[in-house]
Image (cartoon, rainbow, N blue to C red):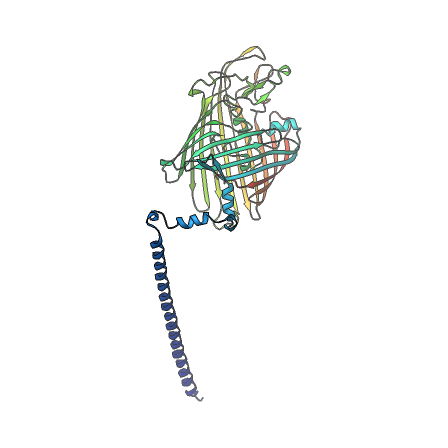
Amino acid sequence: MKKAPLRPLVVASLLAACLIFLGSGVARAAENDQLKMILQRLDALEKENRTLKDTVRQLQQKVSPGDETRSAADPLEEAVRNLPVAEQARPRPEEARADLASVDLGGRAKLRLIDISLDVLVAAGSSSERDEEIEVLQGGGHDPRRRGFTLQQAELSLIGAVDPYFLAEAHLIATEDTIELEEAFARTMNLPWGLEVEGGFFFTEFGRINPTHPHAWIWMDQPVINTRMFGGEGMRGAGVRVSKLLGTPWYSVLHVGAQNADGEFMASFLGGEVGHGHGGDEHEDEEFGIGRRPIVSQDVRNLGDLVYLVRWENAFDFSPSWTAKVGLSGLYGPNFTGPDGETWIYGSDLLCKWQPEGSFQGRPFFQLEGEIIKRILRADDAFDEADDEEIAGDTLRDWGFHLQGLYGFRGRWAAGLRYEYASGSGGSLTHDGEFEGRSDDPFRDDRWRIAPLVVFSPSEFSRLRLQYNIDDADHLDEVAHSVWLGLEVLIGTHPAHSF
């Protein structure tokens, strides 16, 4: 076999070497040209800089000695202020909104509104029970409470910074029948040592459900045990609360507060009222309290007649995907049964949330939330004017819990299930003035509820919910079934709620 001649291979190698040499030469020439251009540009910038310095120096020399104490921007600001209105630039949209959100208070201070919002909750549905019984089963003041349509609430919220030291909030609630003040308080900012003070009219910081507004609830109605402990509108009143951020490796806050014990929103304390009709038909409009005991009117005599709160919150990040929050709460104060009546309420709450890293629009996620509450009400001896007899004191114990799980999946959909149970001990007063079991008392009988839920959120400003309630209680003849469809719309900006 003949070998291939070497000449073509040698020629090809020489051509390749020449191309490489020429290419490297061209590249070096291009780099040299680019370097020359950069140096020329630097020289030009240096000349411009010297020219600008000379110009500034000449302008400074023209300023009279009497104006030396004024800043260089003052003449320019004065000229802009003297421009005709037609020649002034139109403010940017965000500046216009900022002006609209500032309210002059006598020329001395300005209230800066950070968030203004209107949140509307409406519901439609039906039940196997009549409207009179639905109002008992749906004990929350903003629950769906009748067949057909219900305006649960329309909440107007105003939140703003008063000054560098205080933040203020006001929340007004409108329903079909009334307009009421939900909250109005001021909170300190920038206090040392991790302290925060809140004063005014506000929800009691007990557990997870009571301090939050109805539009922040996942389910459409208030848990049964919360209604029994704190009334249909939740526990709130005038007072003060002090919070301290503890110096622990994890997030930990201690709350201590005091509020007035009287008023319609203090059902377990001096407020007392949970229903009407004690004493028979001739007294059908008379108010009665927990255990159907009569309400004894009392004055606030000293600090011992206030309600006191202690709450300890802790939050943990187990991983980038798992977060948990645990709380312990306690309340103590006088109750409506007489001068020696007192009430203790304590509970624990838990929230666990899973949300993987890189989730889209907050999906997927899973949230497990629960709360257990117990009340010990020591009733004082009292005189029942309706039945003209003495009522012996007693200790009424009530407790219950709710546990709910919600799974959010793609497409802004979520589905969940909630289970509730409530029970207790100690007799309730009957219409005949006798103490019997709790089975005929809808505010204290044994009861459970199962409520599946489906949620669709078209955006962060709207939400649709479909909820089905299965209720079984001792005072009912049979299990009650209810279905509710709810719509929520938010207009404006509302601050995010704590998780």
